[in-house]
Length: 111
Length: 113
Image (cartoon, rainbow over all chains, first blue to last red; front, side, top):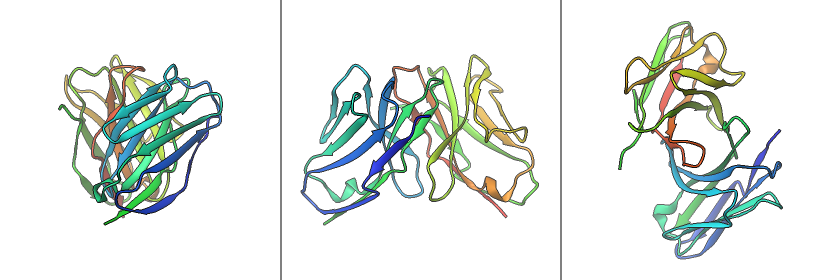
């Protein structure tokens, strides 16, 4: 059964720093991996989707990498801003395309 | 950019009452989903819907739950007799297929008292 883990659970960094969020999954036979952002009490905003055949995807200051063989993905945020403060979630679909979610990393960017 | 919309944003109901959560998925999407997130816990899959029928459902989605796509735009989740443990944020999502990202609504916060 697929399990998704995110480390750290919380991260607080000064504005301007580059940072990396980690996501690991137990079953490497994934179809894709998706990173989401969740603001407090709000919905889930899709940030990046990486197909299993891809190594990375970029969107603006965000870069997500995927290493299927080791069961890991990272989300790199460059030049962090206070507006980046949110919870970041990763999710992978199981064989029925039900998303299996990590618990998220709560990111705080200090001005 | 088109988005998934959910109403209401917050619903308070008494235990045993029926609630209907409403969603308008993105118009050209074919796959529809409900997920929920109990406060402080992971997001959990409830049900997926394709071609006017349920394609998959989780153990959470018991006989108290039902989904409907009554017309070409709305997608609803009904809970017949709410329990305290149904209190959660309910998210609707839609997608074009397995190669495409899922798009989520802002959620409905359901509080059962």
